[in-house]
Each structure stands twice: as structure tokens, then as C-alpha cells.
Image (tube, rainbow, N blue to C red; front, side, top):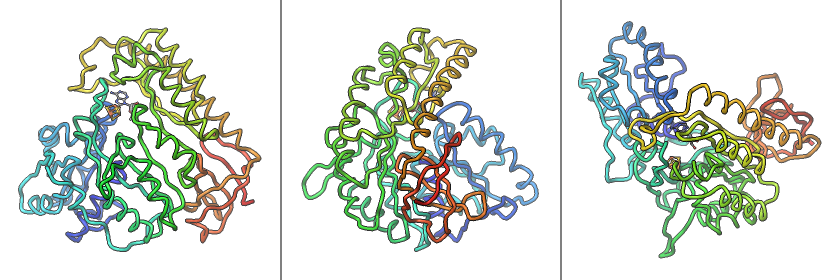
Length: 424
Ligand code: 5AD
Ligand code: SF4
């Protein structure tokens, strides 16, 4: 979502004449977009800001800003810790960037971490008809009402808000007109998206079915989903909407019912496994991906063993796993913590299992012919890279003009994180 938001910030600042530059030497403004989800991500911004100090010393009217969820969570504290920062802007206030930049130009530091009543997207222009990469993000939902005990999102991104159907369809059409053939619908809790059209209630599945009618749009994806919001229609869509890709990111966080309960996830391991079974019933080849937290407060050896057992049952095609990181203001932050060495030890075990499953899934592709959406030139001359329907990175020798088209590719071998192929 930060990639999408950075583009929207560029759109907003474009109206004041700003254009992107490749080097900080050329910049009149440096805006850092930040993530607050784990401590490591949040702390990174202060070292990153340090790197820009010499530029500010050389060019005193250089504007330095911090955007994103660290801006939202820390507000003025950022300027106190790093006084060269001129502007702090939370994710709900990006439409105010042009006026904030102007005020900074007049010498007034700016902090905006409000959650305004109006839809920020109404005020965020889309850049003029520039050609776009073949695949694009489109935010349909923001914020979260789930309040998992470890998570800052409900505080930094605010309450769950769905964007209206018509605006989403308009934005999708605009993207397609500019060359986009794959859209990834985004939301912190994307499958909680709901809307209304012609008096009828819509869920995410209906939105996907409607977007699938756009002829030049070839592929649809969505991320990230909460298991409890996978309704019957969305499960069915994986079986009957051809443009919906066979890949689903469905975080579970833990395989232990005790930990799931104290995490406030509101489902059990068995319910999650049942859901996976129902999805695989309609789409047997679906690639599943997940998120895991190890060392959540109270996690015993046997709770961790339950997580390993769940992974063995699901066999994820791909997964992200993290050590629990206490976040200020969240319910779990004050609970007694698992020893750091134990956390590292469990993370290493889990990651070994997850990479084994990822490797097995990749290797099962060798010899198959898969549709691959070619995106951009690869590292080697004459090479192009793209994505399989299962979201593998795939590289092959191909003409650059094929960017934006789906080719049939025969998979030759599997590297650690990608597949090598030839056009079939
Ligand atoms: N500590 C560790 N991991 C976290 N995540 C969210 N909050 C925390 C935290 N406090 C992980 C979850 C989530 C992903 C985006 O980040 O697994 O699904
Ligand atoms: Fe955070 Fe996701 Fe839980 Fe919402 S559902 S609180 S975004 S982990």
C-alpha cells in the first residue's frame, strides 16, 4: 500500500509542479514514506534521515518530509528527534501535501496527522495520461476494525473505510487506458470491502466480477485478507472468475488456538484449515501465502509446534514470518515477552520449513507451461521478467515489445526465488 500511496503523493505534488528525480542531489523535496508495523521498520527512518543531512546542509531550502504510518504514530516527536524535518504527514492527509509544501516554503513547519471526514481520494488527482507499467495497485479499502492484539494498523490507518464502487471502476478504467493489464486490489483488510450499487449491497466478489468485464484487463488479484471475511461468494469467485489469479494471501499468524485467542484473531486453527479446504475445493491449484508471528507473548514450545504442524498441513507456496515486535499502544505490548534467543530460534525453524515448501512448489512447476505476464527487462541482455499466475517471478529470453502481454512459458528450472523459462 505504501507503493500505491507514494504514487498518489507524486500525483498530488505534480499539481504544484513537482516531478520525480532519481537522485537526492537534484531534489527540492525529499519525502520518506514509512512503515510502523514492526520496530525495525519504524527505527529505520532515523538512520535514513541522517543520510539526507548533508543535502540539507548544502541546500538549506531543501524540504524534508516524513509520510506514512510512522508520521501518523509519532507526529511532532519526529521533528523533536530530527529538527531538520520540515513536514510530517499521516496517510489520511496526503491530499493536503501541495498546501503543506507551500507553507514549508514560507518557513512554517507542518504536521498533519488528522483523520478527516471527507474521502482523501476525492482530492487526490491521478497524473495525466502517462503510460503505466503493465501491473498496478488500486486501493479499494483502508484501515481496519479487527484490533489484533499485536497490530498498529487500526491506530495508524484508522477505522475500516471502503471506497465506493463507481470511483473504483473509474480508476480501474483509467489505469487500463494507460496500459495496465493487471490490477492488484489493495486494502489492509481487503476482503471486508463492501459497497452499494443500484440499491444492492456488494461484496469484494461482486466488485471483482464487475472489473473482470473490462476487456483489456487480463488479471485481477487482491491483498490482504482476513480469514473471517472470506465469504461464500469470494470463495466461489476463485472457481468461476477466470481473470482472478490462483493466488491468495491469507495470513493466519499462529497455529495454536490459545495464541490465536490471545491475539484476538477470532478463529481457530481448525476453522482456518476448513477454509483452506473449501478454497482448494473450488480451485485445487491455488497458491496460498501467509503471514506468521513467532514468539507472541505466552507462546510455549507446544504452541509453536502447533504453528509448524499447521504449515505442514497447508504447505504454503510462499510466506512471510516475523518475530513478535511489541508496538506501543497495542494490547499485547505490556504482556510478558518470550526470550529473544528463543524467538530467533523459532523463527529460524519456521523459515526453514516455509522455504522448503516454497522450493517444493516452485520445483513442481518445472516442465509445465504457464501463462506469464511479461513486465520489464531482466538483468541480462535480451531477458524479460514477469509473473506467473501463481505470482512466481519468471525470467526468459523475450523481445522487449512483449512487455504487457501474457506469453505461454515452459518452465526450465527453479532458482531460490524465481523460475527460468523459455517461450513455448
Ligand atoms: N510484530 C510482528 N509482526 C507483526 N505483524 C503485524 N504486527 C506485528 C508485530 N507487532 C505482521 C503480521 C501481519 C504482517 C503485515 O505483519 O504477520 O500480517
Ligand atoms: Fe492488523 Fe490485519 Fe489484524 Fe487488522 S486484521 S488488526 S491489519 S493484523
